[in-house]
Image 1 (spheres, rainbow, N blue to C red):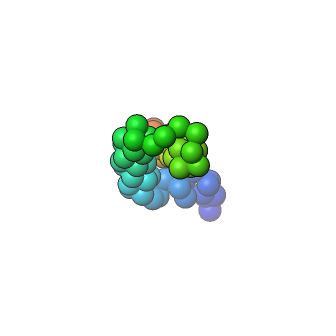
Image 2 (tube, helix red, strand yellow; image 1 turned 120 degrees about the vertical axis):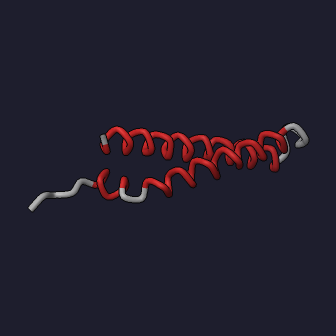
Length: 74
């Protein structure tokens, strides 16, 4: 009986990480374009910056998982 690691369970849904990465990149493009039209110092600007940071973190995680899973499958 082989034990499955948490990474193995995550790698079973590798295609979902690709989708998450694509959504993150698209969101970063849209938020980056919107950031140029928003006045600095407003609450909308702060929320947009927080969203950008969040999508960078999520995109980095999904990219890391895609790389890790592709290396484990070979």
